[in-house]
Every structure is written in structure tokens, then in C-alpha cells.
Image (tube, rainbow, N blue to C red):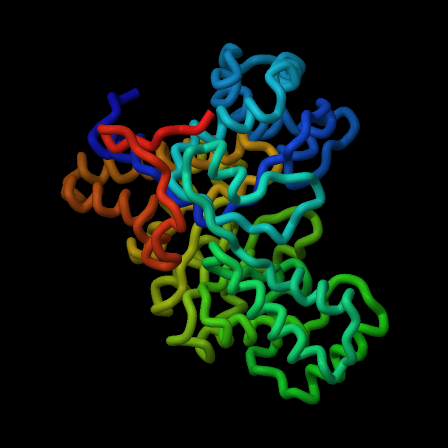
Length: 391
């Protein structure tokens, strides 16, 4: 293996902006609970999620942070985690991520999770919030509203939510609910009222295509960056409907309005790259794919995403949820994968070192800060400029 070059050295110390992640669980986990959180699928009988690329990467790259040898057996790993306790486990992995800022989606919490402030405190970083719009709509329905008043009630609730201190973006999971093969036009008021009447009468989660179109157009009116889950996810998503290329007509109609951030994207990261190349306000990341492919293959995903993506359009995210290992592992994969491909281009004289270092800064931190603004509060730093981690 070649010695690390200057791009590796620069990315190793860059305070990343993790522009989309979730909280870490605030409880000690049994072996079964831990295994259920390291897979997007299910922990099937007789088949351990440790026997996946993500599970192997956890044992290889996370075990040393728990004072275990590399490739520690799963039973030893889970036992050591329990011995240390969730607070110490979270502190170690969040600190090791080297993030300077976390943008935290607070709209999905089937487990007890750290708040954005808790996540930031454990890492010695800053944090901000991403508001999930489907959750806002469902809370409006739960409070009770007439069909004719739904549109105004949702708009008012969304405006109130984005005024909370620290909110920098909104998010939609329309990919999970209907997919993106939606009519791109803004729905008429009467159409929204009729759809609201049907949804409010039957209840359940928001999965009406008219109301999801209304939600996306409301996001445009809110004026904040809009994050959209695309591609890879758990079994609830119908993957062929989560191709971001299906959004093309809607992106034409909303061009020049808000930034649209395509999250995760794999296996449609090339389609997302095309959209970022032709639409001024479209951006992407490959977050969830990073820790699921692991250090062994994340570089290939990043290379494919960067084939045509403008360098000011790719962002870093971990999409870590539940286990803080993924906050660390996502950052590790991103740093190693991006540094390797950029350094190889420098060595082949396809990039100058100055260009490579600028691309590393843009992708790991500055593109996100340009979209979301600076952190609400910067962590305290020592005389060398490194963040002082809270313990």
C-alpha cells in the first residue's frame, strides 16, 4: 500500500460537515438490537448482519476504538460495547468522526435518540436540524383539521417548524411513500382538499400522491434547502420508484428556486450526477452507500459519482442512524475513498495538488456550509485550531 500523500493528510484533519445524519441510540443494546441497527434489511434467523460488508467494516475499523483487536468476534464486540455503556461508546465514535458540524434529521425516531445538541456535545462539534415534512403533515392530521383547512394548517405548521433555532433545511421521504413518478405540476387547491379528505378519513401515514406533490411545492415556498431521500433504503422503499431521474420534469419547473439535495442515491448515483451537472441548484451525496460498501468499495462509488458531478455539487453525509459506529465509519470511508482517488489523479498529473486540496475542502465541508450557512455555534478550539472535545 502506498504511503499516504498530502491529500490524505489534509482530509484526515478536515472538520467535516455531515450534512445528513440522525441521532445515536441513548440505551445499551443487546446483541440482537445492535445487529438490527447495522443493516437496512433484517436480522434473519441464522444470518448475522455482521456477515455483510458493513458488519465486517464495523469489526475491522470500529473495534479498535473499543480497545479491541481488529476483526474482533461479534460476541466480543457487543460485550465490550455493553461494558463501556452507551454514553462512552457514543463519545468515542462521534469524536473519532472528526465532524465539525452535524445536520440532524429529527423526524425519524423509533428508538430513543440523542438530540442534535447531545450529538454535538459528545463530538465537540456544532449541530443543526433538518425538519422532515411528512412528520409535520402527520402531526397536523393527528391534531385534527378539516379537509378544506389542511393546506393552510400544514403550511403554518411547516413555517413554525423551520423558524426553530438551528433549522437549516427540510426533508421529504416521498421516495418511500409514492416514489418520484409524480405529476410535476403544482396541485390545485380543490385537488388538495379532495385528497386531504380521503387521507384524513382513512388515517395512517402520508402516502397520497396529490398531498406529496403539495408537500414538495410547499417546500419550495418555504425557501430552505430541500433534502430528498433517493435510491437505497430499507425494504419499505420501492427502489425502481426512487430513481432521482424521475424528478426531471419537477426540477425543470422548480429551477432557480431552492437547492435540492439528493441523498444517498446509490445505485442511481450516476443519474443523480447527471441531474447535478445540468440543474444549477441540484446537489448530491452518496452517504448511506459509504458505510454499507465499507472502505473496500466506497472509493468506487465516489469515483462513479464524480465522473461528471461538478466539484461544487458533491457533499459528505453519513446518514448514520442509531449506532454511532456509522457516524465514524461514514467519515472514515469518505476520507479514505476521496483522498485515494484525488491523490491518484494528482500523481497521474490529472489534477494539481492545489486543485485536489480545494476539491477535498469543498466536498467535505465548504459545499455544505455554502448551502446551509456556518454552524450555529463553533466548538472551542485549541492553539493549533483543533476542536476541544467534550468528555
